[in-house]
Length: 114
Length: 119
Image (tube, rainbow over all chains, first blue to last red; front, side, top):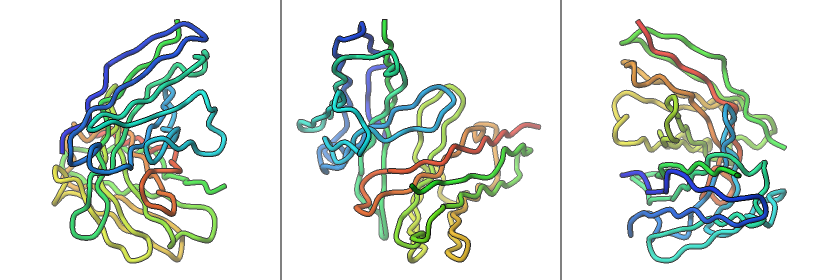
């Protein structure tokens, strides 16, 4: 299973919007509506930001939104804030072996707030 | 709010084994599935495998097959990761992550355990 493809970096000024793409195949992103997104600040554990393509866990600001079309998922951060500067990873369920889940992560995108 | 508390940092020599633990708070341990994810220095996240706490079924990433074993102990609400025949490129932070009840994403993460493999 190959890693999902993300841009290495994106940047924007405070208040602007940025979008991160996540491209996979029909066996992962395109095959299931189970794409999740994780935010990771330096030295910290990842934090769930989006699950099941476009659902936000409780406590995640609605500035974070996501979608999917075909084999590509996208995360949009609107009204960019300084604390949004972090690495972001997409992750897709990719089916199962005999008994259970199989996941694949994206290559990661560094978001810089200018 | 469930928390996952991981064991402390480890330093191992090449060829050795390491066992990392992940203790979950709360009393519904067996209702969930757990994943292990690692991150080499300066690199991205790598999914290592999955285990069901209810029945012990596992799935491992193909590249780790034969070197990795994931287990759970429901009596102590603890998940374990064992990695054998360690190499320098196994140096990484190892995270446990609990799925939610739907089993489609990793909802709760431990703080990570640093494993350093060096001669």
